[in-house]
Length: 169
Image (cartoon, rainbow, N blue to C red; front, side, top):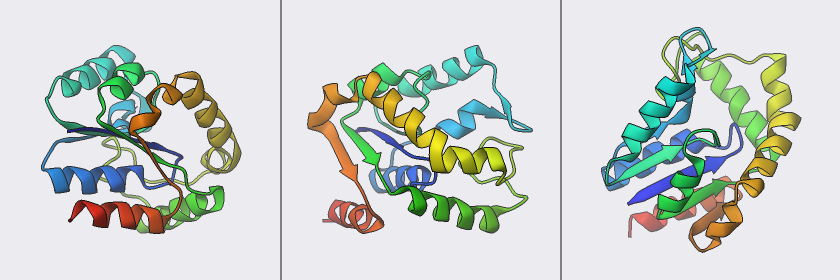
């Protein structure tokens, strides 16, 4: 089983990926761990590409994150399922806000080492405007529509819960 989890910042991609990895007993790669090096510096692109390429050589995986620069076409083509978390803007903002207070000053397990949780003006703008417009356009341009037969769109926490509960059957 190969699963790609994409969606807006704050939509719950990492949580979904972790749940799927635990359910199927397969490895999970969080792109935020690949992209961000300590101190919120972008990792060397060649090193990041190598990490992703090597991870994808496995027979099964769950990968969470959008990052079209990291094997996007291959990821979408190889994935058995593409889960798109299309939650409303304010829901994503609220989740990110709660996450900030939950992890403030600490690094989440799905984030790059040495990248403590933060909430600054740049990230708020990304959550509310820039990221939503930019990400949706990239996904459409990158050909997500080519894979509609394996795309699962979840638009609320209720739909996410129903999907995960359906796996237990």
